[in-house]
Length: 284
Image (cartoon, rainbow, N blue to C red):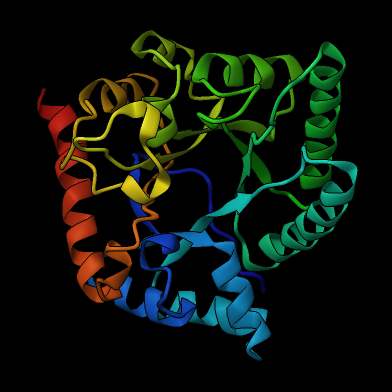
C-alpha cells in the first residue's frame, strides 16, 4: 500500500526543507530532523533523486518516513518549464518523472518556479499560461497539486498579486500558490498583497529572513532563520490564520554557512525558530 500524506489538517504545521542541510544525505535528514521533533519535511527533489540513484528504492523511502513518523507533504522545486524550447524539453521530461515519483511516495504538492525571464511580449504571456495549464493537467493525472512560486527576479510573476491573478485566471483546482517570504520581501510585493491569499489558492508557505542586506542585492545565499532579520512575519502569519490556512509552513534556506550545521542541530534550532514565529502571531 502506498503511503499517502493527507492534505487536510486542523492547523498549520511546521516543516523543514532538506535544502537547509544540502550536503547531508536524504536518510540522515529524515532521522535527524525527526530527532529534533520535526514531523514534516519539504523534500528537496535532487537530494531524493540522489538517494534513489544510489540504489535505494521508492519502497525504502516510504519505509524510512514511516519508521521515523515523518510526513513528506511537499517537494521543491521544479524549474525550467518556461525556458527556451531546448532547455524546456529536458525540464518537462524531468517534471514528468517527478510527478510519478511524488505519486509513488505520497507527496501531494510540488512547488513549480515561475521562472519566466524577459524580455516578454503578450504572446509570451499567453504561451506561459498555456504551459502552466499543461503542467497542472499533467499533475492532476498523478493526483499532485502544483504550488506556483512567484520569484522576485522573474519578468512575469515576480509578485504575489500577479501570481494570484495567474492562478485565478487558469482556474485549476490543483493549481495554487507557494508563498516564499524571501521573494515576497525582496521583490515588488506589498503587504496589501497578502489579501490575495485564500484558503483555496494557498498550497504551501516557505519562510526565511534577511538581515542588513539591501533588497536589490539580496541573494538566496543571504537567507537566514526567520525571526533573525528584518522581515515582519506577524502580518504574514496573521493572514494565514485569518484564512484558516491548513498546510505546511517550512523553513527554506540556501545559505552555504548554514549548510555546515549538522542536520540534528539544525532540526532543533529550525523547529525552535518556527514555533517562535508561529507563536508570535497568535499572541500579537
